[in-house]
Image (tube, rainbow, N blue to C red):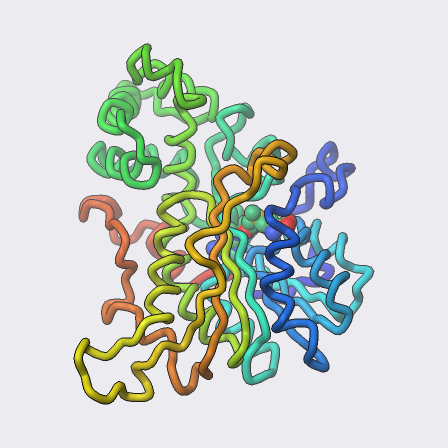
Length: 381
Ligand SMILES: C[S@@+](CC[C@H](N)C(=O)[O-])C[C@H]1O[C@@H](n2cnc3c(N)ncnc32)[C@H](O)[C@@H]1O
């Protein structure tokens, strides 16, 4: 984990370097996020917010403008995002600081902030438009590039390596579970056939074409590009997105002071399910039903601020299609983390309650396994 104000990290390529950060990504549900955070940020003498997904700094910039005494610590695992956002937010001086790490290290970042608890945490999950649009990152089926897909290009396995190493069973599982791909088995079989013929898929264009050829003709004509779900699935697997999120949420809640607020924006159902479960657990009693007296530690410690998930309206979707899939949930801490730690809602194994890959999925020494255990979220691998 590295504080990186001024750290150029992975510098933008020459043609991308000319486009300012503000034009690379449009923040989703911006006013709604700020309105939900406002009660925690507008009154204190020196409120602090952690933006766990800094991206191009759009949400953070608007928050710094609206709340005059606010300081923001912005986390991102993507060095290029850190670099661009730092440049964009330089005008706020010491009111903004960037940290290059993964958001499951939010507890350490909050402690380094040197206070009892922060006032707000914002998490706008998934990829930024920068990552999707940037030639060379490999996130998009629409842009020819090597199959990288790592948000942090400083370490870990690429999508190409995953496709080279994973068993057919593992590939099918990833596509089915993370992409909700109906034709997962066919696509996995085609990937393995091609690999065994010595022509493993290594570019976005080859992967998009293989998927298109693997699905039945009728399915090619509906539901957008046939490779959309495969790309989403591989991205989630490459970046261990769901495991990191599952670890991060209780830590984010425990980083909040009493009265502090958490806002999370998800872009697919697997993420949103995890957010929903963690927030619902904090808003419910942990005591067994029928207990005459509920122990203090078992009482709810969250108040839900949204009823169900908030979605973008038609106007926002028309101007920013990326907002079509957003699901926003928010909660306020009603009791201090010392009285009611959210970490207690984690399973004893510390593993996500969500889907698990087949046991054969990973070789024990795979860098994908190690990246969040040996040096969790470390910026310099
Ligand atoms: C949707 S963008 C955020 C956009 C931002 N709210 C804005 O307005 O510009 C998501 C960002 O989160 C980052 N990210 C995704 N997963 C992360 C993780 N586990 N830890 C830290 N950053 C992560 C991505 O690199 C990306 O830059």
